[in-house]
Image 1 (tube, one colour):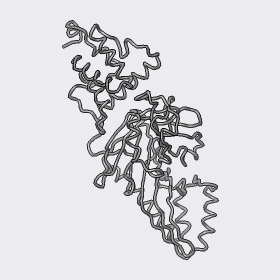
Image 2 (tube, one colour; image 1 turned 180 degrees about the vertical axis):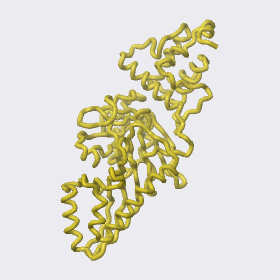
Image 3 (spheres, helix red, strand yellow; image 1 turned 180 degrees about the horizontal axis):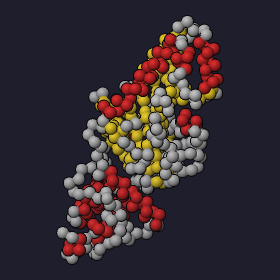
Image 4 (cartoon, helix red, strand yellow; image 1 turned 60 degrees about the vertical axis):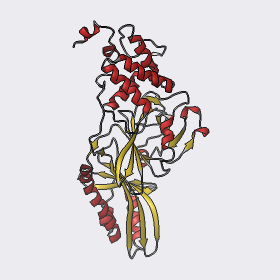
Length: 403
């Protein structure tokens, strides 16, 4: 039935209420992909489902329940007002009667779009983000942020396999992604790790229920001369349920209840937080095939180190290698001096994690526990390396250091 014919029967809000949200409108039968069962978001999506089917009274029932239960959900309040208005006559856009400024209204519309887009999304069955090449067996969780879709995904190890168990609507920096310098209000792209936990009682209200600082700038950021600090995963002000998709000074912000749900599940110093422009989903077998060639290179590096053949060992390092005070030449000189005193070297690796660096081509972050034994030294350390596939098709180390 055409829009014109249906409109003759009474006010029809679908073409107007959802016009700014297309093509992400959903039908009542459409599944949602909110793995964690976020009841407030589910009610909002159910409201839009009912609007899409022109069941306005049902939609009003859902949205009334939502605003009564969560009056801080400003997007829900806006939709509620529009639906009440739609009972009296046609409306023209999301936010027909509002005291919000143009910027605030634009932010609420942007939030509606990304929430509805996520409701249409389903990862292909049995897939993982292609950045998660391998998570160490002793690490139970990893977070990965899909910036384009304003979504933070939680993966947990269940029955020996990584599984998507929960996801959260999330906010990034006002000026988008690819942070370069202090104060640019952009969110960094890369592989980071939780390095702290700060209770909300110790913070200004703008950070909400608490914060997990991450290690921006990481080693790669510093090699690229990126500046800034204080990038956190944190909550939202106490009078707010959610912020616009782009509203922070560069941090990732999620609802306070979502942050609380993560409070005792993220391990300081260990849990990886990957921030990606978008997520590409792949079958584990495809990821394993990509990984196989690199794992062979990593094993050759270990064996060549043990061999004490300095030429073979140093061929695993890029001419652009940097670490601390060393560039490639000074590092080779240092290793040459150290090698002279060695009669044997034994190296064992365990707890291996491998991440493809988001936003970069052929760059990996590799973490492991290293057990080193020689005739005059024995030691263990957590080590981090960055490997790049260079133009000749060979994986080489461009950074390594103690974690």
